[in-house]
Image 1 (cartoon, one colour):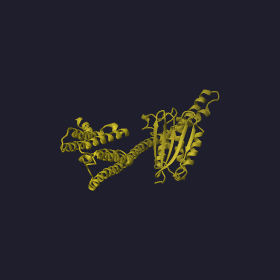
Image 2 (cartoon, rainbow, N blue to C red):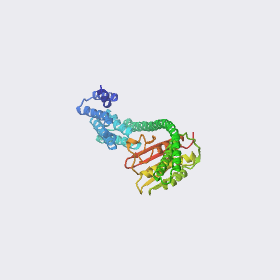
Image 3 (cartoon, one colour):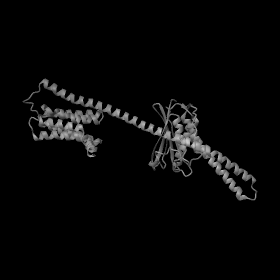
Image 4 (cartoon, rainbow, N blue to C red):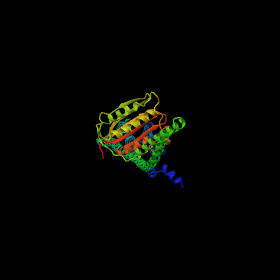
Length: 404
């Protein structure tokens, strides 16, 4: 059952049509010469095998394949009468191969090479006993022009198809990113509701425990140092847990954006100033685009976004390393990229790093990137990451220049 799909990858309907057409050309050979039929068959094999051989997809492979077709077509034309040969249209095979795989200049170059090869047969004519009539000259020139025109037209069509394919691929990539963002938003919404409920349920017992610890500490005799110390531990751990609960609530709480026109470079500079208090000798480089004018954002929330991304980049870098912040304008969006040359992210974590409670830090709780992602989503933007283990990571924030 699997042999048919496998066979279809190598034998296409177009291949069968080409086999029939080249067989018909060979059958119509007036001389039925073995060399003539053999060269027709060789051109057919080259044409059919061209899209199936990986080497031919390389630049060297394309050039070699075109020259091979041109050489066989030249021999076939020379064998069957030179300039007067009815096989002169076989020169279209290398020209069309060049036109579909290359830009206009290489296509014209191979077209002129094919025309030169065709004109070279004039050298084999005994002009002392032959003469070319004006009508024959006109036909010869028309043949050459048809070859060049065919190459130019096929090249224009191939270029349009390549551009359309590139646009479709770009749209497909954007759709894939959008689908991933939607799935991430759905997961964040569900986990946010769970976190909110859990945090509210924890707040009451935590308050009771802390109040009890304070009462116990106030009523302990001074000589009971151990009990006083234990009560202090209870209070400090309750405060730490309460801080964690507050972060859960920050993650779960709906955001109310306060958009105002702001210079994103200034917002990033404020975040850098905060990160510099905590970095370990990491140099932060700025590369801001002057083409990026102020646009509507919630500056405080976006400062939180850039602070988290910069802090992560600094913590992932080795002492003395560098972190680069780049801004640029792309169509109707502003892009901010934070790049480091640190440890990178393992491939198995790439799909989950924006999920809550996913962290590689010993003391982290995994809410930094989810909150960052939530803020960017609320702005109608996207957050993407490129990372290679051992080579570093680049986080890209893309924000619309006009609020919806």
